[in-house]
Image (cartoon, rainbow, N blue to C red; front, side, top):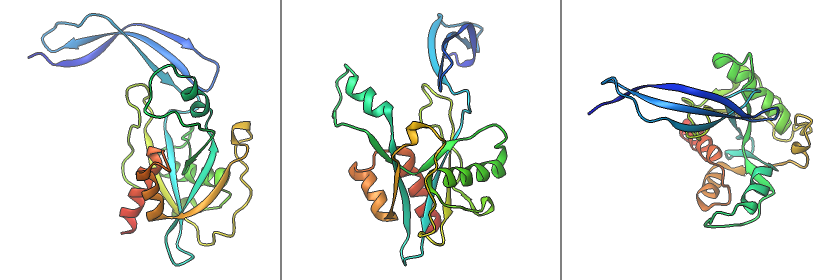
Length: 219
């Protein structure tokens, strides 16, 4: 049985550009080890000009005698508008406006290696959660993973950082975008947060994954 050994790009075009995401439309052929090729087929995937990878950070504290994690409720227009407008059948059509996640952000140019990931994690924590953490104290929780490999080449990196004093929170400055407006944070016990993911009260995959890795790390 023949095996695919490479992909040949027959045609390439940018379908959309100038915004946060770009659609790249490719016409591809599969190259097989016996020298044959597949028929041409179209494939669309997303590019993010500001940076491809992202990092999710489980901010935690043990200051109150139990392990608590910080959750952030922020605007997610893709959920608020995209699901309600979709003509496709869905198991639920509950309304979304604010969405619960951990702190997360895009890995940008210069964020190279583990040092770069730790620095980016600390910057996102300061921006989205109002806490100052030392990049050297950021924990990297294992290997990165691909959350949506069918349409996006983004690799998601998982990290954690401990807050000694949860009362030392500064303002949630965000990145200056209206999309950051109205965000709020709250502390919840780690086990209860994971249980909320299973129950569907928290519906973000990266949040459940990083919280489970944190629990494994803390034992």
